Image 1 (cartoon, rainbow over the protein chains, first blue to last red):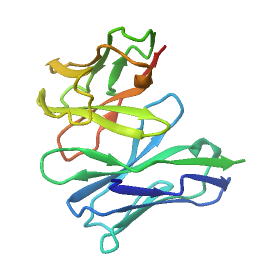
Image 2 (cartoon, each protein chain N blue to C red):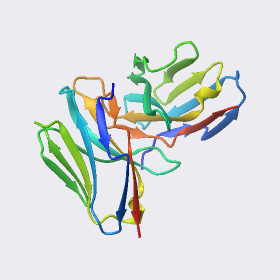
Image 3 (cartoon, helix red, strand yellow):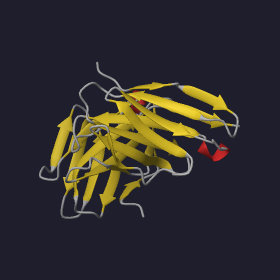
Length: 113
Length: 113
């Protein structure tokens, strides 16, 4: 059972465009939602994270939008650059004291020059 | 810049051999996680520790996999005997506490022939 569903599986965007990746979750026990960026041959790197009491968080060109009632959140990459080409994973952490990350399936982003 | 260090980065061995993967978590982090990444299954949680104590290893095949933390600076993941289906990239991650995102190492790419 996939607890965090991510879409699309792959995405091609022109340089300068907006990349949008969506995630949905079912379990209301999740209370922290990080996004990871992974380049080939590297481990996932924490990109940006949000808690459900905040509807939006922005860091540079990266923005998370969070809709608690719909149990959905999304990553927007503004002014996408070829260097942003990577695989992006959304994730969710259980509340309480476990720290267990549940990952989405990943989105491979290609930004064309 | 603090990092999670994994060794070896690559390992090729024959079926039936013992494989040991090592991880040095970020100093001061008290949670350590082992993940396996494959194209088919994505990122799977194998085991995790808090304050060196195992919390959950339900993701690991118990008959051949074992995970330990002999001390706060070393986590190990062993496979004995190894099988071709164990070929994957194994990531270690550590976190400052249970409700904060984890930081990943660059993984051990394991190939079992």
